[in-house]
Amino acid sequence: MPYSSTTLNVTLSGSIKPSTRLADQTGSVLATVLVTLMILLAIFISAMTYALSRYGKHVQNHNRLIARYLAEAGVAHRQATFESQGITFDTSSWKAPNGGTISTITEPWGPYLLVDSKGLFANQSVHEFAILGSMAPRYMDGAVTVFDPGTPLVVAGNTRIVGDAFTGPMGIMEGHFRGEGTTFEDYLRGTNYREAVVRQFEPDSTIMLAYLRSVSDRRLQATHQVMGSLVLGPEDGDPFAVEQDLRIRNDLLISNARMLTSEGVKSIFVDGQVEIAGTSHLSDLFEIVAEEFIVLRDSSVLGRTLLMARDSIVIEGNAVFGGIAVCPGRLIVREQAQLVNPSALFCPTSSKKAGDSSGIFLQSRGWTESVVVLERNCDPDSRSRRTVYVDTATVFRGLILSSEQADIRGAVFGSVATKQFHFEYPPTTYINWLTDCYIDRSKLTYRPELPVLNAIDSISSLATVSQVTGRP
Amino acid sequence: MKNRLAQKSGMTIIEILVAIVIFMAGFSILIALMSSTLVRFSTKELLAADNLAREVMTVATAEQDTTRSDTVIVRSGMQFRVLKEVKIENRLAEVTITVSRTKQARKLAELYNAFVLPQQ
Image (cartoon, rainbow over all chains, first blue to last red; front, side, top):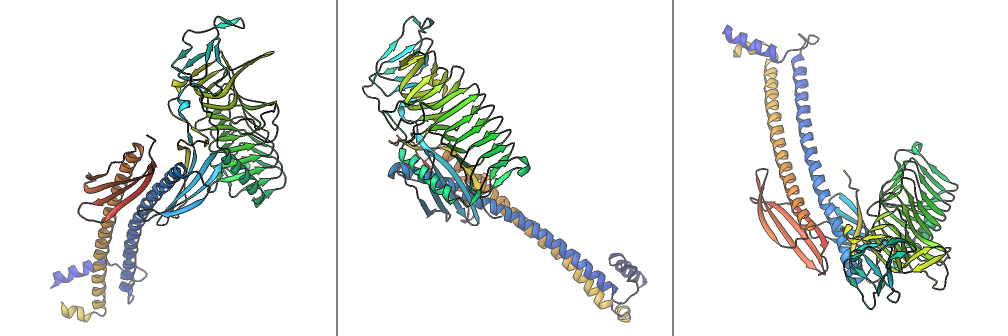
């Protein structure tokens, strides 16, 4: 039939048209068909690959979610074990009910504990680093606690206390004080608990000793060494990734540089001094240990860093600090420097005579929110004076725990627990006097974490950092 | 028609190839559609189960809720069974959240976490 014959011809020439190069050549249609076949197969394989890769990605996220919760569970397990069985620095690993694995490593982190908990599920692993300390004891629920019950607390001048006070006898300086200022009628809003003996609580010194031993061991073991000074700037990489622990034989200067750890916690041991300036930014878990002093200045920002210096640590300019600073000498926060929560300043006892005025000096006009702890003098006969000082223009929010003296001139939104208050106005000195200061417990709405205390009430977390290390 | 084709050399192979191409094209499209539908369905199911498990775990740990529960929740048009089990020992609360489809017993997500209960 001519009609059907025409139709067949049109169909063939329309759908499978040989190229002009191959026209009229034997087998040209076969080649065209094969090419079409390959294109169709390629489309099919692409569609399948895309769909399967999307599915694979979701499975990976699913496994990572499970691993993240396992890592969190590891921290809680360690926390519970420390409370029931005491603190141990060890490594442990166990199987979770859902088939995953939890591994934890506990190390001292200054006066706190650092738990590295790893959750492993399928091929995904997540690390949860938690800095653990002690929940503030009951006395810290008050505004003022004085451990020395024998010396009366004198509240004088324009002092105002909002909150409870745990003290021995309390006196009021009526009328004028040194010719200036008068006593406010509402100097104390709360109750004065005149307990016979207020138990003095102190940090667990074994934690700090273990940390100091660990520092000296790790300093010697640091494989990567810089024989002179190290100066880091933006030209050294933005950000500069620290791959391994580092020992610098001279000084370290970080100026306008951002630093990250490639994985986990990285330690930098400096035999000289450390200066962090400009717009430098360290946000990961770093540990910087200096044999001399550490200065943070300009607009530098330090997040979860642990700083330790033998002589002094100074935070000044517009620097922002949110880590843990440990120094047996002087720890000074001044100018417009800020302390942000969670942060801790710790002045441990030292076998070395630290001079006659070691302690923690809060003299900043910027916002300071932290936990401040001063340990007692190791030599009770020593004449060196150790104190926590809050300057007149300083507003501090948090907890102050001093096993020696506290000299409060400014405002404390939180709680102060001390062996004695101290007020010095040369040439006179008043022991256990609070003069012209403002302590308001109601302005601290949460319970900050102190370093691990001797009598552990409960262990809680100061801060946590998560790191995903799973393979794609 | 038979005579016409028989007269032309190579016509039989061309027809067979055309048939193969048409068949392959149809088959490819069908398989691709089926697999992507299956994968999309599994992905959707897995995502919904993960979100549900995470939601229940977040509430349990944030509110320190230690009550056991077994509920049926509908998400994205699918019905899930969410089982929350809690084991308490020495103030440590261990929480396991298991999410499965109500129609099948297969577990889609099983999260495990723990938290320390505050002192009384």
